[in-house]
Every structure is written in C-alpha cells, then in structure tokens.
Length: 330
Image (cartoon, rainbow, N blue to C red; front, side, top):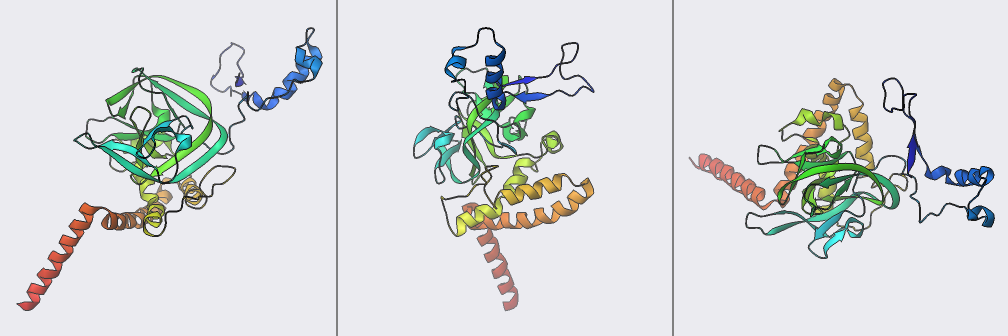
C-alpha cells in the first residue's frame, strides 16, 4: 500500500468544490505499527518481540521534494560501448542509440551531461505500456517530452502526461500504440543530455532529453518547428558549446535536494519558472532577446561542428569575398 485518498459522503472522489486529500503511507508506518500493537486483540508477533519497525529495503522512501523530470533507473538504452544497459548504468561519455540512417546503419549520440541525477531517490513515474507485448513499458516523469507521429515527416514532442490510451509514440517499428498508463514508484531518477537532445529508449521509443514547464500549452506549437523541445535545446546551447570547445569533464555536481545539475540546469530552470509566471506580454519581451542570443550561439555551434553547415558557410564566405575582389579589380 503506497497511499490513501479521501472520499466524499457518496463514496466518490474528485468531485467539484470538494478537494481530495492524498497521503503517502510510508512516513506513518511506525505510528501505524504502534497503534496496531496497542489496540489489536490479537497483536502481530512483532509486537511481542518489539521488531515492528520500518524496513528501508522493503518499503519505498518518500518522493523527493521539488520535482522529478527524468527516467527511472530501469529504463533501458542501447550504447555503442556496452550494448543495452539500464539508465542507472549510463555514464557521461557513453554514446547512445538515437536513430538509424536510411541504410539501416545505427546513429549514436554522445551523452555529454545529466541534467538530473539522483540514484538513491524514490520517485513516481508514469508507466506506459503498449499493445506490442515485445515493447518494454516506458517509465517517465509526466512533464518529460516524448515524440508522437504526425502527418509530416517530423514527429512532434508532447509531454508524457498528455498521452492517452490508443495514442502512438514514435519508435523504430513506426509507432508504438499505448494500451495502459499507470503510476509506479521506482528508485533512481536520471535525465541524460545528448548533443541532438534526442535518443531511443527500451525497444526503440524516441524521447527528448527535455521537459516542458507548461504541459497544458503544448498545443500552441502544433505542427510547428518552434516547440518546447526546440526551445529547450536552444537554451542548452551554451552548455553544449562549453563542453565541445573547452573541456569534457565527467565529474558533475548536483543539488542534493533536487538532483539538478548545479549552475547549468539550476539557473536556467529558475529563469524558466520566472518566465512562465509572467503575464504573456512581459514573457514575450523577455523571451525574444533570449531567443535571439541563444539562436546566435546555436548558429555558431552549427558553423563550428556541423560539416554541412561549415562547408556552406565557407562556400558563401569565399563567394562573397571573390565577388568583392572582382568588383575592385574592375
């Protein structure tokens, strides 16, 4: 038994104007045992031996304070170095499967950081099961982004909390049809960041490295290249550039309370929370300059590290240079 909820006089819950009360049982187990021993006419044997205590290994600990924005440690990823491993064994520097070429050649993407890492915390996840029994259920936090098929060639990122029975998630086999969604408690919370911001989990399900802070507004970006995934990937550009240009340090420091990577994730998270709580016009006034700034850094990243873009920039630069030189000669 994980928790209990309140019910109305009619035996229903979730009624209008009648707030429900949700209580996690774990913190009260010692008190429950104490009262059982006091009032039971046939007390359990542990009351006699005075061994009615909470066993840390047998019961889940409370969920962390703050928020959980990641995958459970049981989520599987396929790496170039170690094959298929649980998320709890994934490390910075590992290359994870992110897609396949048209010739069915696997494409691996580097894990350069973990935005969130709490190996010992117990957290609640959505457990999403699929009609294809060969597909391993996906355990993911509600606000984390997954990709769903669209009529266009590009899949669309939506929060996992928006999925319903019968919806599809983009996968290697085309689409995985959701047939069950439940809540589970698991040990470990992990959010790996790849350079592309995408990777494949379990049986080839396409997921994002990022979350949304406004899950109810994902519909504003229907069929648009501007969405929560692209905005988050854009804002993460300085972190990626530092990793690519100057150093690749496997040692990271995480906030012990939230599990967030200090500075690189904590500060942008605070900024994002500040932005989403602003009135719409103020949010736009602050967001537009930030998009221009991070967009410029993204173009720099592409120019430096994308071969196609680097070649294109070189060709355009040389073309402009020789045209100006020709005009001067005339």
